Image (tube, rainbow, N blue to C red; front, side, top):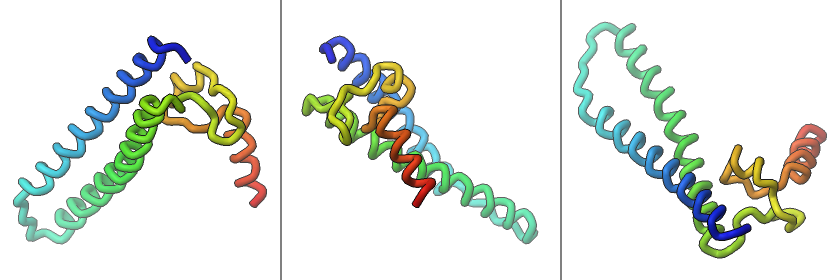
Length: 118
């Protein structure tokens, strides 16, 4: 992959990483600033349900942050865009759709097929 394309993907990934980190920081400050005392059990249950939902979303984003950092590291190491299974180039369309991917479409399809069987 040429240098210009790598820089483009690096910029996309860094933008996603920055946005996710901003959102995580916002969530932490909102949860620590919230000094709500709800005497009504229904209101308290609703708040806890909302918090649990927010934390599940942030946990998924935490995993995505790790994948983005790994993808940025692969760019630095010259391994970005190479399938970790067959070592062929991953298609540019697939990388644009999911820049953190480590598998080409054929290997990913096979992996999903194996998961269904197993």
